[in-house]
Structure formats: structure tokens, C-alpha cells
Figure 1 (spheres, rainbow, N blue to C red):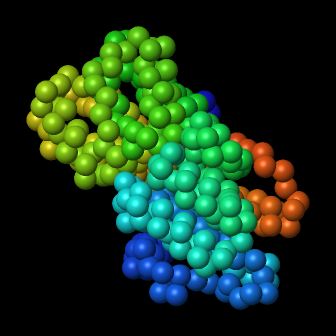
Figure 2: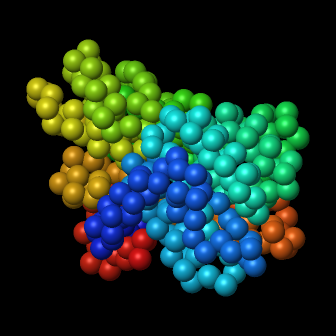
Figure 3: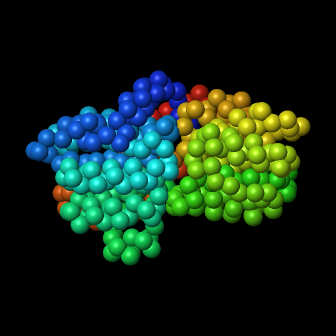
Amino acid sequence: MKSSPGRGFTRSFGLIALATSLLAIVGCTPEEGDEKRTDAAKPKVALIMKSLANEFFVTMAAAAEDHQEQHQAEYGLIVNGIKNESDLAQQVALVDQMIGVGVDAIVIAPADSKALVPALARARKGGIHVVNIDNRLDSDVLAEYDLAIPFIGPNNRKGAREAAAFALGQLPEGANVVILEGVTTAQNAIERRMGFEDAVAASGANLVTMQSAAWDQTKAADVTAAILVRHPNVQLILAANDNMALGAASAVSFADLDHDVAIVGFDNISAVHPLLKDGRILATVEQYGDQFAVNGIELAIEMIKGQSELVDRETPLVVVSRADLEDPNEQSTTQ
């Protein structure tokens, strides 16, 4: 797969500031949180994300805020998220809060593909439009609740498969591989695992072990350190997001190994760029997550106006390597 330019660093400090402010409002009631320009004269859209400790979702929030600033007369926006990727109860509570507020639409990146469906069913029963972004809701559970909720996001399996194939193509045949999974009940984690497995099987590599680090950098460092003690011959770590890739890279740097370990991530957050440039991370996947929220909001507005069919929309992705960051013509995807 042809690589494409990665993100620049121009917004790093702004994203850190935004992350700090968003984390301060996580779990607040709408009166306490970030309720922006939601007067009764225009529709209210709630954006509910996963962990705001993850740069990927901070970038997503920034893009949503920018879009609302440019369309202030069109809709009001409430932005919120959870403190960590596994806090399902908090995300369910946020959905219920938005039902109580009486928003017109909810755009959600669910932390779990199954557990959020009952809450979203309550929202739909209350006449609230729902758009699913980033992590696809489980189709079987949606069917149980007789729900049709459109999804906006990439083909995660394809992206993971192509990133893994890129890395495996630079390693000897039969390389020893580790897979770090995300939250195992999340559909995007399942699809990325399957994509990694596809590439490993196609290349004839040896899958040494597969463990979940729940999207978390610290947990990934601990899990990787333990794996390297048991399997010091690991040559490639396939991490289902960049946070876990960063954790894996930290563990590798402290391990007493006599060989390099290649690492692949997913998300193309700016924090991985220094490691891409110095070779500690071999590749990541740009999925243009900053546009997920924007696309979701635009679809939600169309649904409120009765102008859209409930159809899924697949978004692009591309493998990013050091060569892309060295391209003098690269353009930041977050500008």
C-alpha cells in the first residue's frame, strides 16, 4: 500500500491544552461540562468519545470544535468523553445524560461494541438520532434491539493487514511476532487483530503470543516487558493503536536484547513521529480520525433535517512510515 503523509507537529501544544480542559470536564453533567452554543433555536448535537487521555480523541474533539465554530448558526455542540478506554459505565452515563438534556443527535465512538447498544436504544426511543463513529457497534446486538445506526469509519482489518504486511516484508521469513490487542470486546480491536493475523499467516511468520493491553500505553509497556522475558526472540510487535505501540517501544528500550524489534502502531498520532523518524516504530496507520467527528456531525445534521438515508460510510486509511515524514511536501492532516 502506498504510504501517505503523516501528521505534523504544529498543533501539539494546542492539543495538550485541549486535552487538559477536556479531561477536566469528563463525566460532568452538561451544566458543568462543555456545552457550547446549544440555544433552543438550533439543533443540539452531542459528541461522546472514548478516552480523552488518548491524543487520537483529543484531535477528534478539536476538529469537532473547529467545525462548530464555522457553523455556529447551524447547530450547538456538547463535547464529552471518558477518562480511560475501559470505563463503559461512565460512557453509558454520558449517553443517559444527553437523553436527559434532550439533544437532537448523539455522535458516539463507543468504548464497547455491545455494552453501549442498550443506552443508544433508549436514545433512539426518545427520538434522538444516533451516528456511530470509529468503533463499529455489534450488528447482532443492534438486531436484537431492532436498531439501524449508521457507521462512519475505516476498514480496520484492511489497515492492520497492510501495515503488518509492510513490516513483515522487511523481516526474514518466519519472523517471531507478537500482537497487542485493544479492548477485546471492541469491534475495531477485533478487526485489527484479524488484519494482523491475516498478514502473519500470509507471510509464514510465527505468531508467538497475542495479548490485550486495552489500548493503554502503560499497560502495553508492562505486557510487552513480560512477553520479552518469556520470548526474547521476538522480532515484531503489532500494536492495535499507537498508545500501545509507544508502550511497547518503551519496554523494548529497557529490555536486554541482542537484536532490534520492529513495532507497528495504528492511528498516526503525533507522539509516534519521533519514534518513526528514529526507527523505533516502523509504521503506523493514518485513518484521518480528526474527520470522524466532523463527518458524524454532518451526517447527524442531515438526519435531523430528514435528508439522509441510514447507510454506512467507509473512510480512507493509509500506511505511514518514516519515508512519509521525511517528505518535504507533506501536509499535516490536522491542519
